Each structure stands twice: as C-alpha cells, then as structure tokens.
Picture 1 (tube, rainbow, N blue to C red):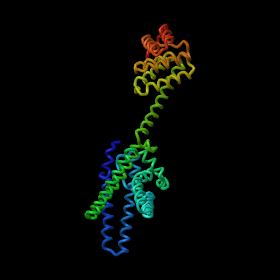
Picture 2: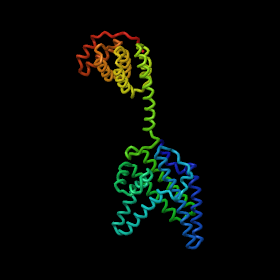
Picture 3: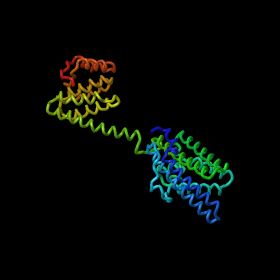
Picture 4: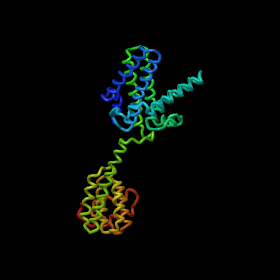
Length: 357
C-alpha cells in the first residue's frame, strides 16, 4: 500500500463527487434557514444535520475501507444513505456527553476534561471505525490501548485534528460563501477519517487488527499454496521410492530444491527429511538424503545439511552420500563445529554412486 495515496483520498473523483453533492445540499439547507422563521430554520438545520450524518456514515465506511488495505475510496451506495447509522450518532452522543460533563464541572477541572476528551477523540473514532461498540469507545482503557497501538502516528492524528479545527474556525470566522465553508469542512472530515483508516492499517499489528487485505494475509495465501505444491511433490517422491525407482524419485525433489527461494530451503529440506524417515524405506534414504544435502550445500547451509545427515544416519547406520566432494565438504564443516569423531568417520566412508538428479 502506498501510504501517501491516502492524502489524496478526498480529491479522488468518487470522494469529490460525494463532497460536491452534499456541499450543495447542505449549503441549500443552511441558506434556506436564513430566510425562514424560527420553526423553518430549525427544520432546515435538522435537514443539514441529517445530510452531514450521511457524510459521517461515509467517513466511517472510509475508515473500514482503508484500514482493510484499500487505496481507493469506496463508492457511496444505498447502505450509506440511512440517517440511522449508529456510529455517527454514537460519536455525537460521546461528544454531547463529554461537553455536558465539562460544562457541569466548569473551571479548571472542566478544561482538563475537555482537553483529555479532545486528545481521545481520534482513539474513540478509531474504535468505532474498527467495529467496537459505544461502550468500548467510551472506555478510557480502550483509548489508552489504541493510543499506544498507534504510537507516533497518534501525534499525526492529533495534528490533523487541530488543523481541521483551525480550518473550520477560519471557514466560520472569515464568512466566505456558505458553499465554500461547507465544502472545506466536508473535505476536512473525509481527510481526517481517511487518515485514521490509514493509521489503523499501518499499525494493524500493534492494534491487533486483522484486515482482509494485507501483506501478511497475501503471504499466508502464497505459503498455503506453496505448501500444497510441496505436499504433491513429496507424494510423487514417495510413490517412486516405494516401487524402487529412486532416481526417478529424486528428480522432482531436485527440481523443487533448485527453484526454491533461499529463505525456504532449510525449512523445506528438514520437512522433506522428516517425511522420508516416516516411510520406512531404507533404500530410499541414500538418494533422497544426498539430494537434500547437495542442494543445501549449494545454498550455503552446511549446518542444516549436517543436521539432515545425522537424522538419516541415526535411522540407517549404512546411510552415506553419493558425492565424495559433498561428503568431504560436510566432514570439514563437522570438524569446524567440534564434531571431530563424526568428521573422521565421514572421511573414511566410501560414497555410494547414484546418478544425481
């Protein structure tokens, strides 16, 4: 994921279309409020509020979308058009409850609580965006967990929140045309919530969040497919070994090891060795073990090669290799790690010739 692309989310065609439509609609209601009496103005403000609830619904879906690994904003659909989406109302209730508490406390205590609630606002929005309920979003311990999970990125969110507040204040203080002020505020909303989603994705491990699209999940799917192919290769080796076709048995094994990524070679070699030892086919151990050790030495993993040699020798005292040069290299390594007796016995062995695969 290109993390900088999230900064462009409000300026994508999808987001700009949504912002443009709701800017015009909300501005229309606010403009109408100035021309009607008290009752009409109240209904106009209620209409503007409900429209902004729709925007906030989109913002929470945007958090989910970006936190899930997407790099493009979602398209507003019919599911986002309900004014009864719970999360914006939950967030509004939290703000209202916090404001009431600050008012009741008053003085320095009220100011301290207001600062704490302001600092916790991105955390509570993130909790709601990740699907937690309102009670967890109200829980100070959950706030601390999210703030700790975000790490330094939380300061970025706080900076963005202050910038959003500054832009909103300027939009109201300078009294530009209503549509300009509303558009600026809506763009700030979308940008801020999009940034929360991006921070969740960036810090998903620390937050314990499991997106459906992430490098970890992609790697897990690739590893699952690779393990499946490895199992098919091992089955082919077993079938040929069981009927005594040992050279044919090592051919797919050699191809597998030859094309393997270096990061996987040690793990796969040990796994294949363990499987071969379960087959109770002593005559298959020499060609299979020689093939594993030869490729491990080529990959520069003599310590794993020596481990497999000892595994096979423990099962079959007659086990040896088919290459004198590989046997000599392995003996030198055994000597270098303090296994002099093993190295001496290896140097006295006569390799059993098998056509290498």
